[in-house]
Length: 255
Ligand code: ADP
Image (cartoon, helix red, strand yellow):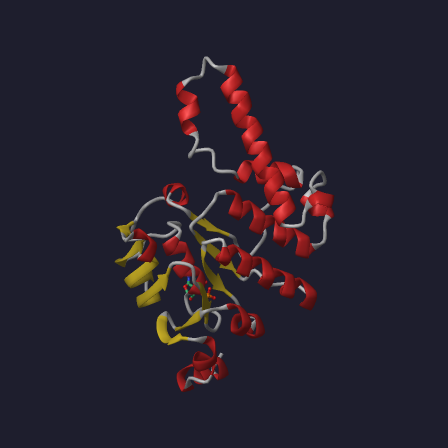
């Protein structure tokens, strides 16, 4: 049954750049509704893995399966239509638009695209635009952005900008959310708020995969952790077990 299917399966993925092997036969399975942490020293292949899952890179070998469907080689926009959303290590917000406009741009316009079969019915389009605006307001409220919604992101504290980026990713109504170092640059209180938001996202049925260096956050947030080192999975399991795994300790000491 679909509800029990794994959200994501990475099967024996290898990614080569000329002579460099960034991912070397990586396999992992993420059950639906889990928060999966991806950790590992710098250069171990974490971002490359995200780029393969989200279609920015094509795997040299191996495959990516989303809820039972093979999606290897699909373009990022196709994957986003299939429910994959991601954030980036560096913020990518539209600086000249308001927070609200950033969210409106992120909203998934495809699931209601039937409306465009009736272009001669302007009242339908109006209703559609109103529905989008309503969804933007829901996101604004859910992510605590009410007071800043009319302002431009660049005028806001970094922690709030990161929250806007998360809200924009959620605007696409994803089933799989990929977060690339969401806690980078956040203070302790902001990290706590982030953890709460990510848990609420998981509890709403979204599967989350998160690359994160903040080990305190990984330990408290993730249901399961996959450790990469030199492009290979060296450990996979509950955070408390993975943290004391000898290979993991060695990989971090060698970093
Ligand atoms: P991490 O995210 O764990 O720090 P990356 O996935 O960014 O690691 O990088 C893994 C390896 O792949 C590194 O050696 C990096 O230099 C290399 N790499 C990543 N992207 C590219 C690319 N587009 N071209 C060439 N090498 C790349």
